[in-house]
Image (cartoon, rainbow, N blue to C red; front, side, top):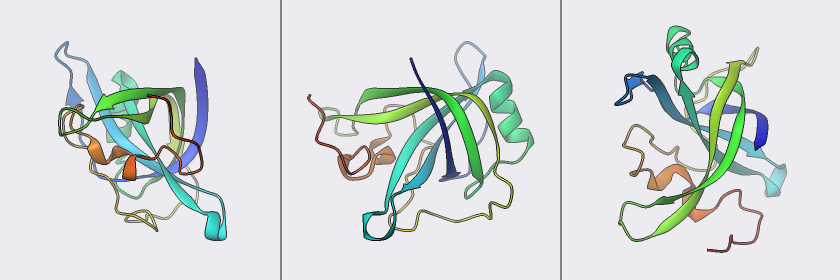
Length: 143
C-alpha cells in the first residue's frame, strides 16, 4: 500500500455525511501545485475521511481554500464518468491524519483551472480529474 504526505488546498466547502452503516465521513478534493514557471500544473486528490477524522475536519471548520497537510493511503482508482460508459482514473487518499499549514491564507480556487465540485454522489465525480489527466506529465495509463 502506498502512503502519501502532501500539502494542498481544499477545493470546496463540505459537510459531514453518514454512510448506510451509520459511519460519519467527509469526501473532498484537495489540489496541489507541482512544478514551477511554465511547467507548473495543478494535481487533484480525492480525500476520504472517516469517523473521528471526519468529525475533526468539521469541528475545526475546514472550508474551501483551507491549506492542509494530509497523510494517508494513496490509491489510483478507476471510476465511471457521468456518461455511464466512459471510465477514467483518479488519485484517492484514505485519510490517516491531517492538520492546517501555519500561515496558509485561504485561496478561492486553483490558479490555472476551475475547482472541481465534490458534493455529488461517488459515481458522479467527472470533474475530479480535469481533462482526464492524473498529473499532466505522464504517459496515458493502460486501460
